[in-house]
Amino acid sequence: MGMGIGAAAGVSGLAVADRIARQYGLIPPDEGGLYGPGETLTYAAQRLLTRRSMAREFPRSAISNPPFANGRAPKDPAFLRLQTGGFADWRLQVDGMVAHPASLSLGDLKSLPMRSQITHLQCEEGWSFIAEWIGVPLSYVLEATGILPQARYIVYQPLQPGVWDSVDMADALHPQTLVTYGMNGGELPVGNGGPLRLRVPRQLGYKSVKYLSRLTVTDDITKFGKGRGSAASEHGYAWYAGM
Ligand SMILES: Nc1nc2c(c(=O)[nH]1)N[C@H]1C(S)=C(S)[C@@H](COP(=O)(O)O)O[C@H]1N2
Ligand SMILES: [Mo]
Image 1 (spheres, rainbow, N blue to C red):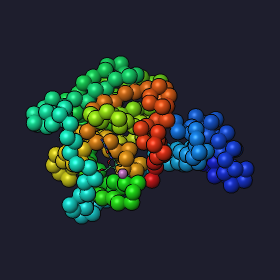
Image 2: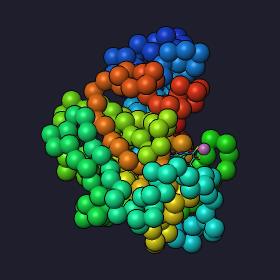
Image 3: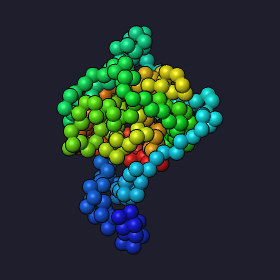
Image 4: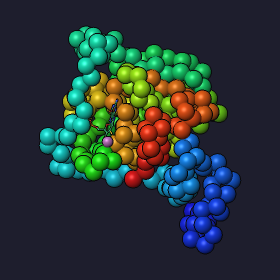
């Protein structure tokens, strides 16, 4: 069907691609508005062609030194209190369409199988770095809490209000999508999102939300924010930021 999308775009334009995308349920939440048809084409074509493709992994010698830190540590009192306590009280809340809603400590997450990857984090502004990311696959966290089969999106949020994002199940269950607590052999530095960050290596850096504190499983993304799938897509960035 990937051929279908490509040929449709060339021959009869976006309308046909849109019809095929709809038939396969491949409509991104930010389809409305100026860039909507283009977003649908990008997302649908990538999902049909590359659902299981892997982000490129690098040798240890390629790790950037020192790693770029785009952000500084959060300064809000709630974060600072948790930091003072060595993040012992940090919790990842998992709710929505799961059989067993949970509030997981870093210890709970570290008791699940550990995976690591050396991948490229690329900012939409052009800079990038390569780092080793260490954590538990998001799929294992979802499995541990009994994700229901109707699930279509995972909505995720940092501790600070205002930022939120979501991924579809292809990225949520992808083996390289990690709930990350370590970096380059050590703890995840606060500047890079410590103590916890969702790493989505097949998409641009802004999908890798730092200071992860909540996961919500849903079958209806329109219930969140303005229904466009993320805070970023309410500000004109693509919801699907595949590389
Ligand atoms: N909570 C939170 N996560 C965030 C951001 C942010 O501002 N707040 N910025 C995003 C953007 S735009 C990029 S490019 C990366 C940067 O990752 P780094 O700080 O590890 O370099 O983090 C992403 N995750
Ligand atoms: Mo970014």
